[in-house]
Amino acid sequence: MNIRIKYGLAVITTVVLGLSSRRFSGLIPLFIVKHAGDVLWASMVYFGFRFFFVKRKLTWAVGISIVFSFAIEFSQLYQAEWLIEIRNTVLGALILGKGYVTVDLFRYVIGITLAFCVDKYWLHRDKRI
Image (cartoon, rainbow, N blue to C red; front, side, top):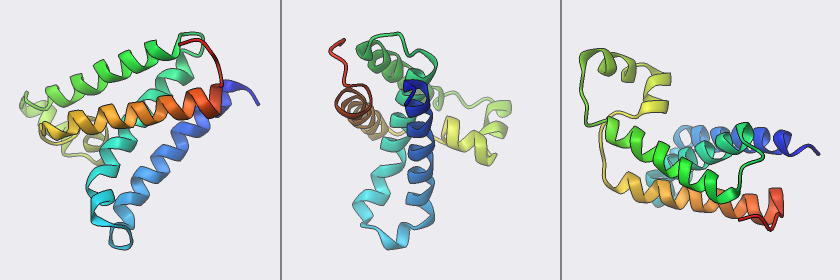
């Protein structure tokens, strides 16, 4: 199977899992409900970068995913009216978040690390790091 298709499926899978963690929150442990959204969001970011930049090294994807995720989180400290309006939409909230939370930075690192492991040991199986 083409690697880009695998990354596309990984993005779709993480989106479905992330939305499911909200939709079925009453059926799964509270710890998972509390942390899954951000972990899966960061994993999706990693797989998205891999989808568009398949020729780059895996460590590049890790670095750019962390920079991107942290930038989104820190952007939540900026509260311009036009940006708040975007964040008040469903899609805007899913992409940009609502408010800065420091623990989200740790969740992002965990999500990107998990995605990297899935990539290296299952999707890609490549020695390029």
